[in-house]
Image (cartoon, rainbow, N blue to C red; front, side, top):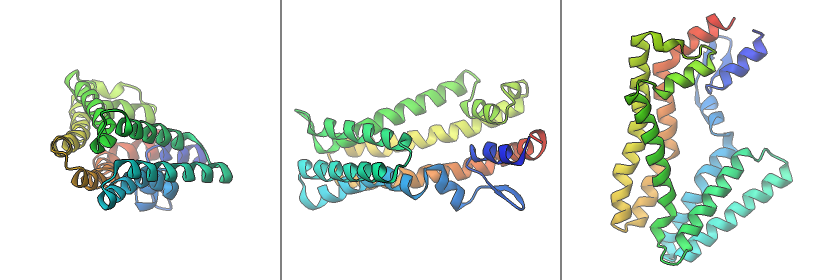
Length: 227
């Protein structure tokens, strides 16, 4: 495999090619969420919503500020001719959040309702994959390293991938355990700031922890079997 293809393969893991091999650092972590642009698109809507609602206590104003911000990001994307893949997901997500909030019978906390569904769905699927002895982290690693499902023949690898997959189940479960009671209590301000902490920072931390656990497997494939 050529160095260019090898580097491209490594990038799928969020890894960066250096003189000393492949590594995961702040730069590659940032790249995994779409760089600075992706970081802004991911965090800005939620931050603006909770900040505006904290100041005004008006859900219409808060939702409107978010809508204007997303419109500005969309125009910027169009002017700079940037890829639309990540932005489309953000537009759909923010649009649904605003609709849930402003619909008849909606309330301020409903801005975050879709995130509960997403976390519950992801966590359930990952947990189910462990229960049926088909941990999705193992499936992902097998796909990215071109090893398919051969790892399932090794019980130690299956248990190892079970562990890493369960860590991700823990991420989604933690969000629900902490956030849902705040939603039910109507504490929108606290919920908003907690979601910021348990959002991207928690996600990037889990990527880092997963990498620390998986790097032996990944490096063996990239520096050995993929040559």
